[in-house]
Image (tube, rainbow over all chains, first blue to last red; front, side):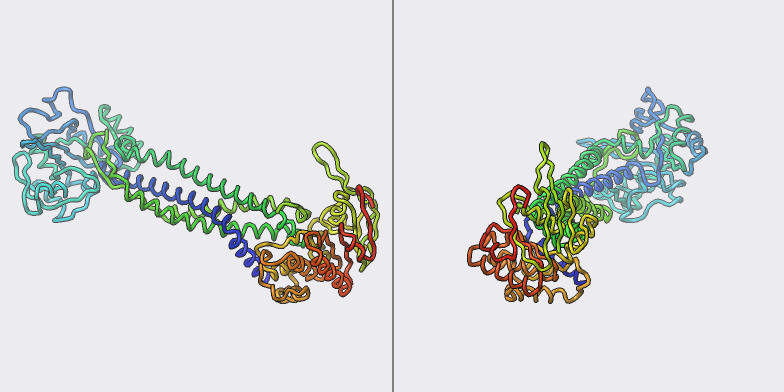
Length: 414
Length: 219
């Protein structure tokens, strides 16, 4: 007990009277830890933003989407014929039998057809409204699932044949639309039953698939099929075999197909961030090790004296490791502070991230707020890294001290 | 106390071999006060390190109280230094971050058997060299003479059989030198120590029971 008391007293005295070395070492570790936390939290934030984008573009629970290109003749099944106000844009149409064939494939657990349309509203400056026809008989798939109803209610199965709509909150706000009012699609008034808020955007107006098909003049047809599977890779291959001209997009495909600042930021965070974190912690370790070795060199006579008066090497090594552990702990705490400050700076200055899919289907573009956030795992890892670095530095110093002979007590080095 | 037979100590450098001790034969009686004199580089400090079990000779045999030091492991030599051999250094070698009493106590750390009374033992040792009122001062707050007194208290607190002193007054003025050598002499008599002291100073050597001179690694 008294030996422990003495060693704690010695440790405290060393840290107190060699403050400069302790502070410099702890500061070096703190900068490394702070950078690791900031960079990792930013990368996590970018990852979360990308997930939000993917959900918005793709829909929760959807593993694959199936689309086809429109025929070369714009007057054909592609649906951009003159006289129609609702256009299917750059998506071709899929028949009910094709949708049904997809749903029967092995590994497919659920499918839902959708009809993505645009309407050009005549005005001084023409406005394009995006419209999404939802398959109410198979809810739970597609971009609509990632939104939150903030007023009124969503669709129920009995709405399939009725003239009702759910409107995006931003579109509703811009056009002063509320629950109970109406919106006009292809000259037909639809009663608004709900307002939906979507993380990054989406279609402006949602309506039952049957109504979208009849209003657009494409009965029984869809231009996107959302697929839930038990094995996306296998089902993707099966659909390609069934419909060779179809574009089958998986979550992974979509992530790579997302272009815009989230893709750039994700790549930056994934590549540069990872290396920056590794370099930062390696530099912190190197600085701590060099400072510790320099400190041991200055304490040659002290260590030699302890050996000369009979201190076992293991006791001296334990003493030095104890000092390093405390310095590492201080560095970790300071690093946490720096890391959270870095996160606050990132949150304050980070721009909104935008993304658009080069694949077809879902909303064209999404904007999300980048928010860096440190998880318990990140914080724990950073603290362990700091202490680990300090212990590595301490072990190097201790190794050097252990090699010193007792005769070092006679050295002239102060 | 000590019996040295045909002791040589050589240091190899990249280009040559330096012989620090060359065939030393020496007997030191129990309770003797022996002074070793010689010019710089004559091998005095190397001899003191071998007597102190801090270094091993290249060849020859060292016996302390009949025990062959060459047969002991590094760990056993450490235990021997902790319990039986004490040092007083020319440059005091106090731990700069510890107070005077903590420096004295540091010599008792390897001796776990002392237990809770260790601090009091250290304080008593400090009082025995006249520094009871400086117990909580750091070395930097003490004069050279006071620092050497702390060094002597640290050496003697564990009741060693042998005290080895390397130029203990080399960094002190004449008045302080006399004070320190007087203290060492008094403690040697009171505690029946075997005292081996390396010195350049003829006045100090004259106070020893026996003086030996070294030159070129030989007596």
